[in-house]
Image 1 (cartoon, protein in one colour):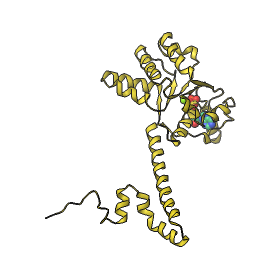
Image 2 (tube, rainbow, N blue to C red):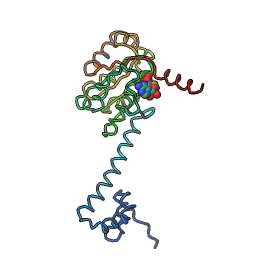
Image 3 (tube, protein in one colour):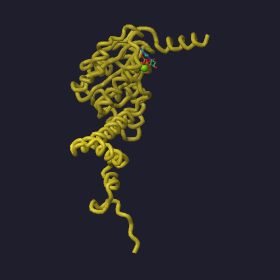
Image 4 (cartoon, rainbow, N blue to C red):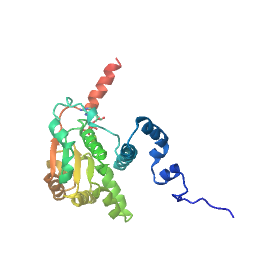
Length: 260
Ligand code: ADP
Ligand code: MG
């Protein structure tokens, strides 16, 4: 009679490595001979040995969950605050940005609006805050405003709007980039409003925009929807105005000078 292998090992018969793998303790399964050797050489106590095993596994689990958060966030590119040069442009309010990076705003369901001309680092700063949130295990989603509305419009057409709205309503932090580069029609503006309204006082929102609030009537088709949106966003957001020249132009100029 042929026997098929059991997928669940019998704890009385299986060897240690098999059991560790069954429990998902991959790092220990790979490393325990070396760990035992260190323990013997260093004359570790039982407690120290157990702590070494558990802390290694906890570190692996943490790394994995951070990597998953970053993947789920769908950042177009990873940006961190370490690579942000606060001396360019000089008008970025450093104190406000550093306070945002402490992530306390998440506990109060508050957010930020980065407002300013193109190339001044708005997306970079929003992404850096999003990245910091992922490192702390916060469920974050990045989207471009136009992509979000297009997605919702397509979902409405195939009767999956409810699920699509959840994508933007449920994360603890939503980053909605580039509000204002392209205007929305009435339906698009309504869908945008639905996201803002579903998140209002329930989650945090970071918006970047190149246009002052007074111009949002032109983005959201009419002033009624625009003021309903601005009202909710502004109520629990801190405005961070970014001014100055475009970093893209500076980068390009430097590269051209390097090529002289
Ligand atoms: P915006 O969203 O305001 O149009 P971005 O954040 O996309 O601008 O910035 C454009 C490019 O310049 C990005 O590659 C960004 O990383 C970089 N950048 C902008 N400002 C700075 C800065 N102060 N320090 C370092 N890089 C910057
Ligand atoms: Mg941008």
